[in-house]
Amino acid sequence: MLKIILSTLILSLSFVSNVFAEQKQKIGNFDIHYVALSSTFLTPSIANSYGIKRSSYSGIINISVLDTSQADHPPVAVEISGIANNLLDARIDLKFREIREGRAIYYVAEVPYRDDQEVNFQVAIKYGKKLNTQLKFKQKFYVE
Image (cartoon, rainbow, N blue to C red; front, side, top):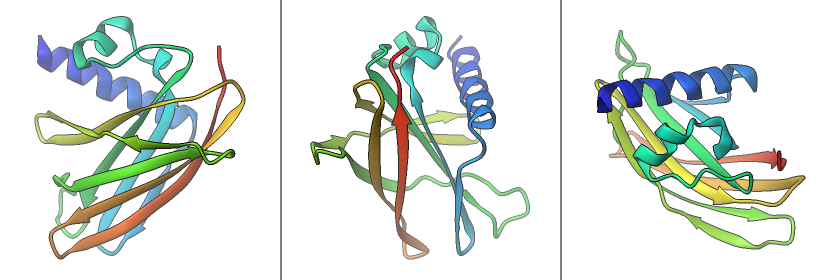
């Protein structure tokens, strides 16, 4: 059952990622894929299974890191932390949770927002001595 739920989450996030266009940063031999979206894009059952608050005022961030130096570009488990802040510089520490489904590894964090609010993200990602980088991006959120 959990495998079906995780597959659905991954599929949902992949679909949403395609809707908003791929967001990726290449650092050396690593591709960092990321997306930030409203938690209402998740079905209630998926949100509930991961303990994600599904609300028009709550967003989620999904990040995965792939090792492109290997033929099948496997995902890697990383150390990850970050902050989000709005234009008034209200800061939120992001609490990432690791999700594993088969070979897939994802990091998900929640962030509150208000209507028509742009949120700046700064995420630190480290993988041993091979990767140590800061991912910075912005996402504008709207209340449905």
